[in-house]
Image 1: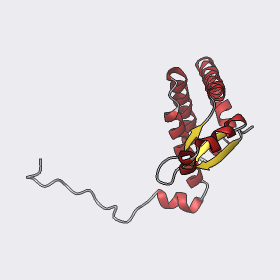
Image 2 (image 1 turned 180 degrees about the vertical axis):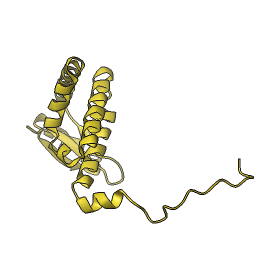
Image 3 (image 1 turned 120 degrees about the horizontal axis):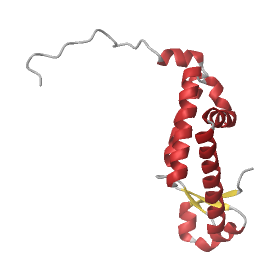
Image 4 (image 1 turned 135 degrees about the vertical axis):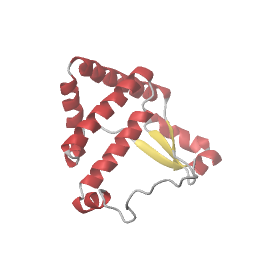
Length: 155
C-alpha cells in the first residue's frame, strides 16, 4: 500500500502556499526543488502514525532477532527479493548489516543509516545481476601492478 502524494514546484509553494496546502487533506505533498533535495509536507497525524508504525515494526523485528537471529534474517531476506542477485557470502553480510542498522535505528529513532545501507546494498545487488559488469568490477584493473617500496627519505 502506498501513500498518496501530490507534487508541486517549490517555487509555486513559495508564491502561493494557500494553493498548495489544501492538498494536505488527502495527500502528502512533495515540493520539488531544482538545486536541492525535494521536501515533503504532511499532516502531523500522518507523520506520527507512520513513525510509530515503523518504530513498532523495527522493534518487533529486533526482538525476534535477539531470540532467533536466523528467523529474523529469513524474514528480512524475504522482503528483499533482490538479495537473490548477491553471492551467498555477500547475501549473509547484507542481511546481517541491514538487520543491525535497523535494530540500532529502532533503539535511537535514527533510521537514515539503515536507509543508506539499504540503498547501497540494493545498488550492489543490481551490479551483481549483470555478470559482465560484475566481472569487470572484480578486476584485474589497468594500472594494478607490483607493489612499489617507499623511498628511503620518505616519512
